[in-house]
Length: 148
Image (tube, rainbow, N blue to C red; front, side, top):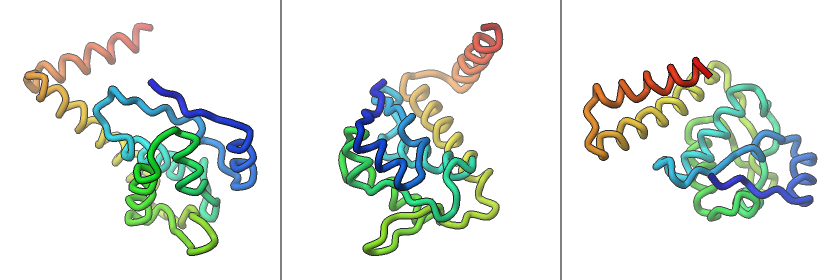
């Protein structure tokens, strides 16, 4: 996994925009989940969990792309998806802000998890696994986690 790079300029931007959770994002290039969706899911989770509040300013697309060492277009796609879903709003010349999201908390978390589960099922199916084998693998991993 590739961990997001954080530098002093990023820290200043986070202080200025009152954001803090995005720097913990780890891009997993081996997950099969597109990078834009990983960024989108993390931001949706941070908004839904209350880490980012309505009115909080998000980092610019360019700043986030540079600091995550990913393409501008990748971050832009994540932001556009979040804006279309009503999680954020962009004000020309002012920046991108967290929108009022009454009642969307559970939806964002469910959507993120659903996307991950769908991707896991797709990867298992592409590897030739049956539905029962995929379920067995999930149960095995849950048992392993619970016994640790």
